[in-house]
Length: 176
Image 1 (cartoon, helix red, strand yellow):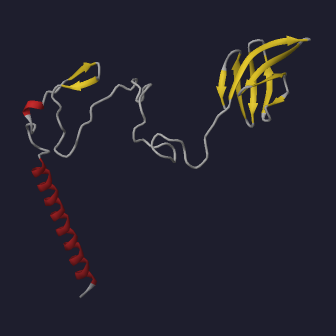
Image 2 (cartoon, helix red, strand yellow; image 1 turned 135 degrees about the horizontal axis):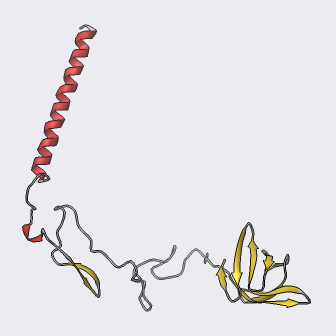
Image 3 (cartoon, rainbow, N blue to C red; image 1 turned 45 degrees about the horizontal axis):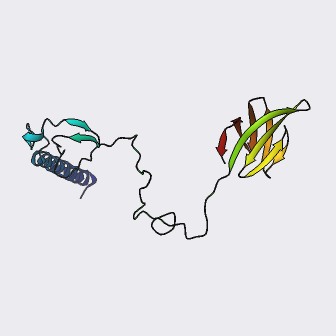
């Protein structure tokens, strides 16, 4: 068999494959009802949403197709968990449902509060509470092992924790 005949044979096989794929795709579109002129359920063609205390509700929910389920919209501002709600069967991090983690690791953060800033002998001093311990600090002082006072004004202070800096106003609190 020559190369010319072999190439012609391969080209013919590709053409037959493309025609078969086109016929199959057309058959699938026709039988699925995509090109239908009327909806499959005329009673749900004009469904409308109504507002209620529980959220938006559809008067006549209309499925897009038999295999696709539409979920009802929810209010994004309504909390998912309320006070007094139980955790039910939702497991804690690495633990049993509603329980504490069972690996011994409990994530924690430290609360830092700037209580006041006052002038002592012409120098501004801040009262900073880290957790439950209170510190009297000035600019350049290090407190609670890894916090440092960068600058102070009458109403706010700038502090650093490692490479990150944060600012607190008097009476403000942050979680680090």
